Structures are given as structure tokens and as C-alpha cells.
Amino acid sequence: QVQLVESGGGLVQAGGSLRLSCGASGRTFISIVMGWFRQAPGKEREFVGVIRGSASSTLYADSVKGRFTISRDNAKNTVYLQMNSLKPEDTAVYYCAAKSRWRAVSSWSEYDYWGQGTQVTVSS
Image (cartoon, rainbow, N blue to C red; front, side, top):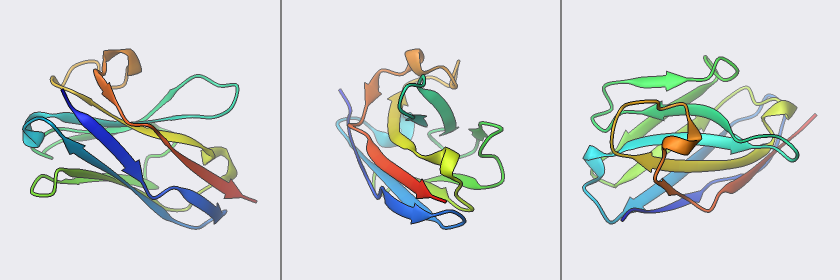
């Protein structure tokens, strides 16, 4: 079992920045693949990015590439999503998720554990 808790959401103006955090407990954190997803009202859950357990690899959705950065601190069992140059279309509930293997990492249905989500609202 893995428990995930996100924090750091809020309201920001377009062009601003936010950093989301996701704390994990319950398993050896370094072995876990950690992904970020988001879901806007009336839309499907969307892949944002993912980081390998060793932090040796990351992958991002085209819509956030160059603006968002995922990192992790395995000593603190925490993964981060640094979001810069935010746009109104980034408004969504953001979720962190965990899985064991680096496979089909952009598919939300492949993840075993989810946080409760944190709201990010970007005003124009």
C-alpha cells in the first residue's frame, strides 16, 4: 500500500508559478514511479508528467514541456511538480499517482495509488 498526499495548489495569475508537493508513505519510495495528472471540469484526466524512482528519467506531456518540471527527494519521500509560466488552461485538479513499473506511464489507468488531488486555478 502507498498513501499519497498532495499540497501546494492555489490561485495564481497567468504567467505565475506554483510548486506542488506529493508526500508518500507505505513503501520503499525509491522503487516507485511517480506521475502527475490533472483533470479540468468536464474533461478527462490528463497526463502531465512522470519521474522514475531513481529520478534518472522524466517524461512530460507536450502541453507542459518546457514549463513544468518534476523532481523528487527520495530522502523525504516526496515528489514535486514545479509549474512555471502558468496559463488559464492549466486550471485543473492535480493528482499525484504511483505505480511500480516504468511502463505505460502516461496512462492513468495503469497507476495503482492516487492522492486526493489539489486545485490549481490560473486567472487571466
